[in-house]
Amino acid sequence: MESCEPEEGSVPRRSKPIHGRGASNNPVNRFESIHLERDEEWDPAQDLAPGTILLRDTTTSIINYNDSPDVGFETSVNPYRGCEHGCIYCFARPTHEYLGFSAGLDFESRIMVKEDAPELLRKELSSRKWKPQVIVMSGVTDCYQPIERKLKLTRRCLEVLAEFRNPVAIITKNALVARDIDLLASLAAHNAAAVNISVTTLDASLAPKLEPRAPLPQARLGAISELSRAGVPVGVLVAPIIPALTDHEVPAILAAAVKAGARWAGYVPLRLPFGIKGLFETWLGQHFPERKDKILNQIRALRGGKLNDPRFGTRMRGEGVFAEQLESFFALSCRKAGLTSPRQELSTASFRSPSSASSDMQKMFPF
Image (tube, rainbow, N blue to C red; front, side, top):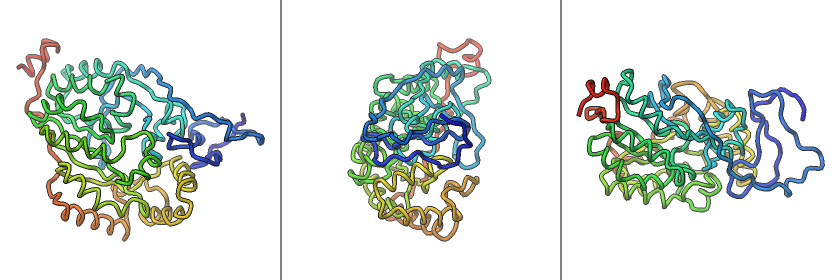
């Protein structure tokens, strides 16, 4: 162990990817001055793939507020920190560094669980300070990641939201969302639920490399179909679009999503903040070495010559000629697929205070 200044994007070398994981190492935490280094005799072939560890998150509040001008929502609920889906491109990876972990393997194998999320949500929705508004689940990591199948924290949060009839917008790439159709359909009857399902690629051989523990594309399309048939408004997010790797799939993804029942679509070009740059470069070298330079150069063409541009207004769309072409290409693909409807606008008109809330709250929002 030695002390050093962490270098942005620096990644310990590892020769091969790890089966079932997106990252193959732990880059230096940008907030830490001490990190572990392998000795010269280290043999990566002897390392076991890290198992997933669940850690208790004892947070005392659950509704997150943000004032970012380009994310499209102000409040969100995240029952989990870290995400076992292990998507190599995930913009949320650097958030794990605030917890003292790495954005690499730690992010997908050290999952913080907010066991009290449903109770905290009930308490905050019952407060006189709460102003009914759309809550997004989740604004950071996926609320339907694998452990949700067992813990059901997201479902229990939805049960609370359904009691209050507070509108919720789901963002996920996991077909497990279809498990909760009963609650989502109940909310949708009051124009208080919408689901956005992320489909990055239709290539069943590429998806496990990009998103090793997420359901395959056909399962996500199946979830879109189930939700649509149940009357739950559902759209598709082609996010992220990776230049020179997945951008050519946009028309096919949109056509398949429409066939399944999607009503709207959105996209975000690949973002590589902080340590994700090094992780993604390593991943490209492992899986697509012959395309690595082309992909990175096209990302730079979107980001003013850099691999990431954090500025509000450009970070979600990019800038320059290539960004304009991508925007036009996506819009044309939407028109050809028949996706001309805007994203579902949800309503707070049916918000109510159930009998479980305080008496003062019931006077404000009786039913």
